[in-house]
Length: 139
Image (tube, rainbow, N blue to C red; front, side, top):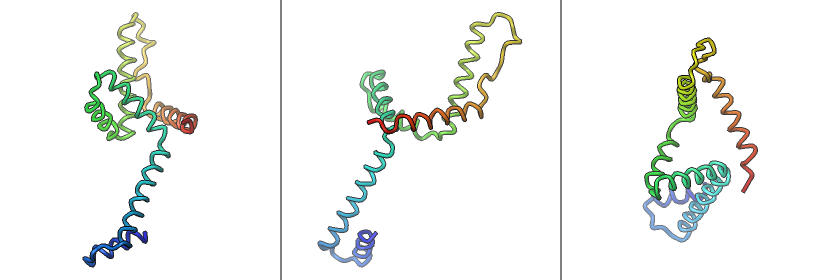
């Protein structure tokens, strides 16, 4: 905070920067870089999953990484709750399609929606927490 206060003082007074200001700016840059490294370290599992999705999507898209990155960024902007809702919707749609494809006339055995939203959300959250606990420490 001392470095930032020094830079604020110099800029607000319109003073010409001196070596103390350069040192303060270097301290701010050093802090910024260490925070970025901390973010990366604390999110290793996300980074590993991102790299895997990126690799697989680049292969599927014949090396067009620009569209792949755009797609991944778009996905990351969707709220977690909306992602969960979408997964439940898609899972129920797949189940429904499979039921229609294999319909043998016994409507009493038919259950829809197969996956109840709140129960499935809790199950998915548990799966994610278990994944984080089990694999976050692997390099």
